[in-house]
Length: 326
Image (cartoon, rainbow, N blue to C red):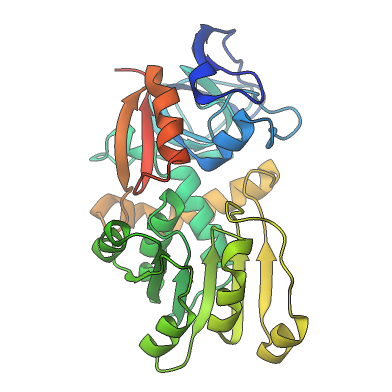
């Protein structure tokens, strides 16, 4: 099969397509013929040699895919050859075929294309994990999302809205602020990184009950100033740095909680439980359009280098999808 091959530390232009051995479906796994995959910032880190896959998982880039089931491993139940499915992966998406634990698959709604479906698993499951399981966003609360025009950010706006929150999203550009508004959030354009005063003014001084932080250290002083009493923060991105000086006394006074986590590092059982919960809640919303992937551009797999450059240049709203077949 064809797959993207890259040596750790490579530049985008050094990625190449090559023939590699087909994967085999192990016990409890499904073989998926990949129609499309999507690009995530974790792929950029792995390409640079800074984010290796968990032990035993595929070294090929790609954390999500959509396609058609072409084989079943021993003991696999709940899926049949020919089913359309989208998959959360620990690796292997930048290829024509991938082996996936059955618990990490979700059916693709009948009216949705496989290209659109490929942009759902990593972004929406990350948002769901952070907002439902970690920060436990409740109806009527104020949710603040950093980098809200990103793939995970645009998914989180929609998930937060469906959970009944009032959603605010930060960005540094006016163009992305306009996009945040289209997807149901209230945009805070903060080219200088300052947003706490604006958020407090918009919420009558209340601040944020929950924060989804896709940036990290660069925004922490303002994030701390924006928190309401009892706030919960989920940190899942570090593009703005990993080291901060943290005022624990302020957090103690606010009775605030901080969760720092990674979806990729969770066990297969943990991922299966996450997928099952999201599938039950999201399937009707994906079918009727209340939840929808936001796609910046669709490129052929041969365009993977250009796709990585788009993400590196922070030039995207939503996801970049790579068409693998068709």
